[in-house]
Image (cartoon, rainbow, N blue to C red; front, side, top):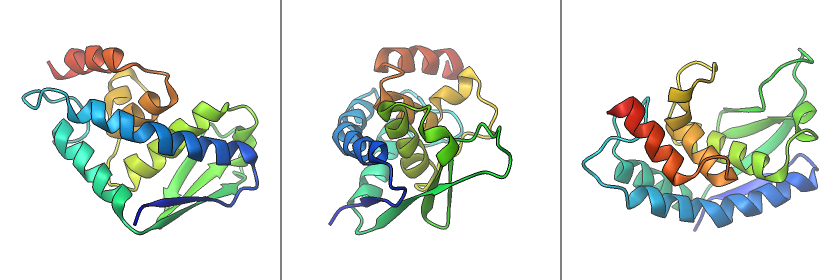
Length: 160
């Protein structure tokens, strides 16, 4: 069986983002798996590139359903796009309209294959070093915001 991501938000954009998620994640995992195993690439984990790829592939091979639910934060200016809790993913419905489909796919990847697999990026303040944490790197690679070359450049900057 395989991980199933279910859209409970009612937004077609999320259905399209889930499709991108399923198309691009295997390609990104292949790229990560093929990196030299002697180097450390990600921040906020001691896992090698191969361990990260294997952990995510194992998670995706499980017979699980991850639901995406919408929520409206009490603070209308909240910058949070989404969060995970108790095996579910919640997306800020105030943000969906301002995100394109690729951004949604990247955030789905960040939350599900980053956080639900067990990876962290420290606090929620974004900086360049966090861009190569597992959640952010996967999200950026899936949504096309970061190329594998840029990922390697940042990785060598912060790991080397």
